[in-house]
Length: 137
Image 1 (cartoon, helix red, strand yellow):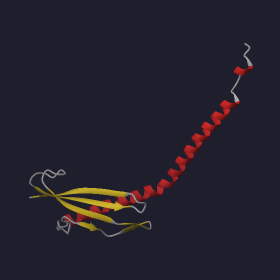
Image 2: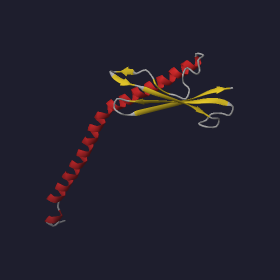
Image 3: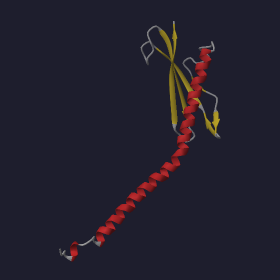
């Protein structure tokens, strides 16, 4: 079957358009790759800040179980001891507030305190953790 010359293969313009589109996709992928290579540091700092927040909550729960439930955790905001992990400084801030029955899951007839821990990672990310301390009367 004979085809006219204009119907065989791709034109120069079509080839150029495909090359430009492939170049744009490659540029987008390389940009995403550079960003993903920079994120492991931030991810590590977020994981370390999460560890510090959980460790701070564990300290508060341990103090509570050791027979000193108040231990200065009454309606206050306190900066806890600074933790240094892999040469980076993490300072948790603890806020304790009384909760009335029925608020934030506090059961009726109980004295509850909401303990919130906030840790700012060196990269700027803020990690927050909370627990509800319940004393039944």
